[in-house]
Each structure stands twice: as structure tokens, then as C-alpha cells.
Image 1: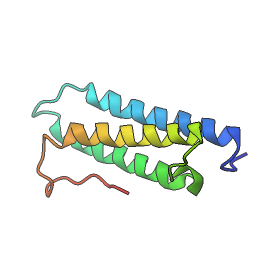
Image 2 (image 1 turned 135 degrees about the vertical axis):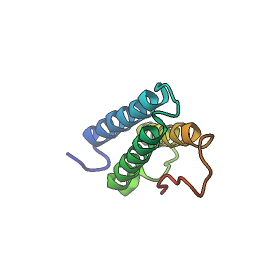
Image 3 (image 1 turned 90 degrees about the vertical axis):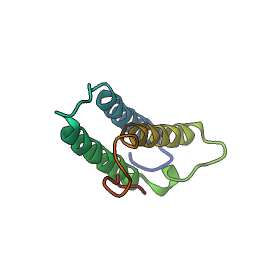
Length: 104
């Protein structure tokens, strides 16, 4: 079931965002030099697009922060962690006007 209150929806969302965060972690592990900078930036843009698309695919109940629903809080926490980590990797490398990751 994909109803926002279903256990399956919550676990699915947690697994998917954990996978995306893992992708950011793998990108972070790349040795960065002049030879792979363009590849790194392309991968960063692609990953940012996947994260944004994933977030937009969630039911609205998972895109707002509830006060007492631990599962939904975890989903949003991991989503924000993925965004922060990805942007922290790219921001020191380029000027803002040269490289923009898609944000919400």
C-alpha cells in the first residue's frame, strides 16, 4: 500500500532516501582532481535531480514535518542530510553562478 499512513510507505521512503544518501556518500569518496572534475559535477547534478524527484514523488504527509510521527521525521531528516552533504561537496569547488544544483 502507498497510503501515507501505511507502514509500507514509511519503510519504502526510508529505504529510498537511505539509498540516495548512500549515493552522495559514494560521490564523496571519489578522489577529486582536474581529470574528473567535470564527471564529478555531472554526477552531482544527476544525484541532486534524483533526490529532488524522489522528494516530489512522496505523499504530502511525508514532505511536511509532523510533530509526533517518528518515521516521517526520519524521512525528512535523511532527505535534508542528503541535500546538505551533496551541497557541501560541491560548494567549495565552484562559484554559485557556474553550478546550481536543483533545489526544492
